[in-house]
Amino acid sequence: MILTTDSSGKRLDAYLAEKVPELTRSRIQKLILDGFVTVNGKCVKSNYKLREKDEISVEIPEPKETEIAAEEIPLDIVFEDDCMLVVNKPQGMVVHPAAGNYSGTLVNALMAYCGERLSGINGEIRPGILHRIDKDTSGLLMVAKNDKAHLELSAQIKDHSLSREYLALVHGKIKEDSGTIDAPIGRDERDRKKMTITEKNSKNAVTHFFVLERFQKYTFVRCRLETGRTHQIRVHMSKNGHPIVGDPVYGVKKEEFRLDGQLLHAHMIGFVHPVSGEYMEFSRELPEYFEEILEKLRRKEL
Image 1 (cartoon, rainbow, N blue to C red):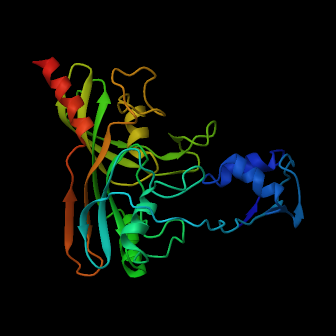
Image 2 (tube, helix red, strand yellow):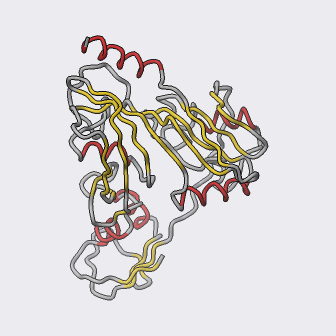
Image 3 (cartoon, helix red, strand yellow):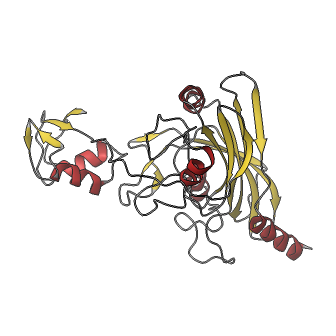
């Protein structure tokens, strides 16, 4: 990656954090320290002050492959054929291995279930993985068994033709029966682990919501994604004044319920089958803990 600076006086690491938002500042500093970033062909320090028309070269090395072990973890398989699966992921399960989570992930379980029958496009760490949902979000995910299926399904994700709906319990009573949140999402400059609504280094994001049930202090909603940005529903509903119940990052500090994560469930997914060309749609009911909270709220309303 080659960048030509359009400003002067800014620190190199700060400039790159702004221009390459998918990289955290600490990751950028490590790349600079390891010599993967040069300015005008020379290695410099993170605090190097840029000049106009400096040429920055950024090389992002391939991740070191880590041996991922197959683990016999029960899977809720909603659909399966020779080229793909649809899996219902439980709350608390990480989708693919990463620092601090090299076991107990969906990938570990898939490797035991499918063996080598997973697409290899995303490498050893993410075989078969087409898209993610957060660790503490439950629900449906597609998995590709071969590269052809992977490419076909990835194209549907990219052109937003995939149908995805979530069920969520949010704080507050939403007055409208439905609405659309159209607000771009990008990395939060103050906390690189968070996403936020911003015009700076962002991508367009659209969420449609529909009220299913109102309670005294909460609203049960269905959200349909038009785009699929990181933490999209969590960020949009929070910025709209109705954060998701149990959300430890974008939610409220004190919760009425003791929860391990947000009450957000990817309940429906629809796509065109990569081989047959047939439109297929699958749904999964709410997890028991989610339904129990709704029942408690309903009893209070009687």
